[in-house]
Length: 429
Image 1: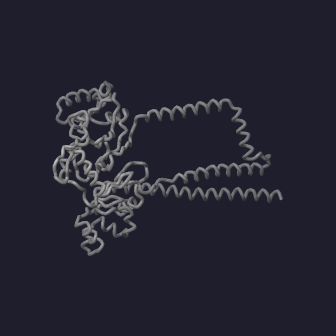
Image 2 (image 1 turned 135 degrees about the vertical axis):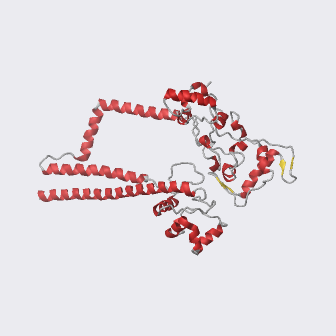
Image 3 (image 1 turned 30 degrees about the vertical axis):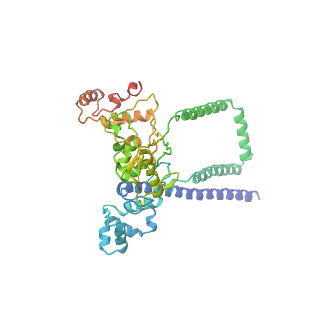
């Protein structure tokens, strides 16, 4: 009877072990598949951004049709033929290809015969799963589907690992008992013994206290360093002004409105008269114009009312086409605000260094509502000075200084930091 009982116990332990291995195998396969899918998503995103994004969006029509979920509407082989040579597909008499060409008023799509089938499949996979949800603010391609490993899977894997240790411990215990070792009090009894030992161990008490103090200090200082950092700040303005429509769709140069950026410390807020240079003749938007923000959707009727706010501010009567003289200031809400003890000069960066506005302000031409793109912290500025090389074009003075500093530091091209961009007095005086 004793032998039968031991064999039953061993069978139960082996069954548990087999179940664990089976679950682990399924979990490992799931993780491996997720890794492959994420790699495909990244490769497809890179190809889409470089080849397709200038004419296509995932979630709405642009120059071409919206491509989100395009494989649900078209056959894979047809899509490959269209992408590689859409002109040849139309010439073959394919009615779908001809209809699309006519729908978009004869706008010819660039052919991509250099793309392999795998590359096209990666692009199509990206149009199906969309962006990885990382919290970024991309007004053109908002997150669609998360392709990262879900959290619940990590919890399951953690539970499997714990169960594996318990199964192995049970197996070793059974083998020991089969060899004649005395029975142990079991897992619960062992945990009680360990807990009693921890309560009596002074070294562990001191170590735990030091560890908790370090954790508290880390969290405290991390929180303090975030004070005054307003990255992502996006206030609601008194007039719905879309940088995407003006700087993006209509290609208006940033310095047309912010004209003082090239010769002044500040970039300046454009006066309503600057707005009227165009809106004196543009009293309404196109029929299909829409602005989608986090709070609401602005259609044509809403946007026409926003233009009327400009007329009210300028004192313009759109019926008589005359100025009434009754003006009303627009109370814009400031988005970017440096501390008073920090000096920053726009002209030094825009005119002398030749930096684009997007370097600090991000892709404003894609923003429906402007928000603070960069952290604007001291460390962020210093990193930029360390990475940016001096622009020597048309500047004999810099060429002379650059040659001396290049010999001093033993480099071919001097950075802004090596030119003095890390001196405290440059920004604080």
